[in-house]
Amino acid sequence: MLPFPLFAADAAPRPELRLWRLDCGQLWTYNLDELSDTRAYVGQSKLFVGSCYLIRHGDEYLLWDTGLSREYLGKPLVRGKEDSTALSTTVVEQLARIGVKPAQISRVGISHYHFDHIGQAAEFPQATLLIGAGDYAVLGTPGHEARTKQFMPWLGKDAKVEKVRGDLDVFGDGSVVMLDLPGHTPGHHGLLVNLSKRGPILLSGDVVHLHENLDTHGVPSFNTDRAQSLASMDRFAELAKNLKATVIIQHEEADVGKLPVFPEGAE
Image (tube, rainbow, N blue to C red):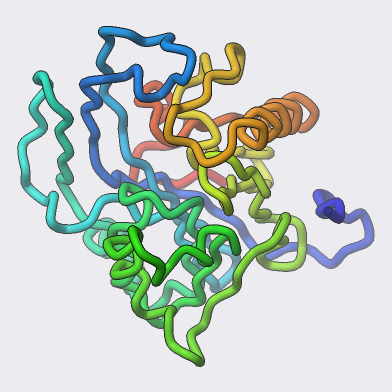
């Protein structure tokens, strides 16, 4: 893995960078113990938020994760004895509030292939898809029919897709970097956004779902590789410490307030 650029001293000035947090749903997890293969949460439940992010780099737009699909739109969230999932607004509706048309999204970056991160991806078929090579490899294989459907615009012979191996410097100037953090899924990635005023922002994908997982090394029972998961947690935590970054766990309700309330963005 080659080191990614962070702050190139002699580089030309970077284009303006701005980051927005988008509401991409809510998820009530009745059996929180699914998020621990060491039985840390027996009998507990928790509300998670679904978060997507829009990054403007000069005149270009990157959408990071696309949340729940429209099938959940308007459904009530029930905090009962079973899982419940709801979506109150769409990505397209939120983009319209800041004057961004779907056709202006040039890149869609996907942290990983789980349903709550890919649901509205196909609404941006003109964009180049950025996805971990390990995740892309399962598309079209038995048992992955539902997620394959969400990626139909990028399955053809001439599809605009970049199968990311390792880290990816998205714009070539170190401002936005996809971080290789496998284990939750084979090709899982996080995102580093180097804002000029706020400094580095680390978006977790699902390297962890809870802040305490970084301290306790909690691994969900459904992760694809335990050893990779632990190594990725360690890398994420060390990056946060060394860069003095703002850490945003994408499913943590408490982290929503770390960025301005939409439609305001962070610079």
